[in-house]
Length: 298
Image (cartoon, rainbow, N blue to C red; front, side, top):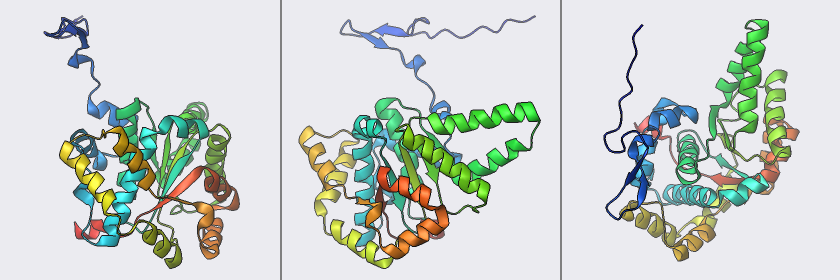
């Protein structure tokens, strides 16, 4: 029988603590959890793992386009994320979340992943990311497994989605809505709604030209937003002075789901169901992002 020796950190001698030059105790770097472990705990797809490096560098402006309207909506979306995470304690107590809306390929998934990573960075909260179609498919697959082990895995997966501090459901509305799919999504959202558990939604469902125009008008020509973002980038830190934070939160624009046009509400209700939309309308603020599909550009 062989015994594998665990390497002892030469800095802290395995204690996890070191005394710095000022005779103060610091936590040794060897105790830090590797990024890949955190990314897997958050269930973030590998394609988006590089975002964690951008958070370390506060490299927020890399995705912003040249078109004025697109730039404004993307900067505004970032400001909403920063504001949301900075004030997460209050939002968590109220069970409030965000809904990113816009055409495919404008960065909605990226921003939802960024939110989860920044939430962990700021508050050490482990949220969960799920592609809605993949999540429903995984549940269906578990139903077909062995009766006992399948039920245990099914309940475990459902329990995680219901109880995580922040749940991201990506691309909601693109899945095939069988009765089972609608029931399971309604169940998850309803349970989280009742237990004040916040949720972030991304969806490609069209918001209609009138809502888009009015939303862009609210945030357009807001050079101050861009100046704030450039300042964050130049400082290479997500932290701002308190007076700038207050300004940042005030400038972040979002809308109530109840404010979208009636034809879009009808479309949403037909696609997702009255029960889902009713709850999301109360707990999620809509953040719209415009622009061309960046995947085609790549």
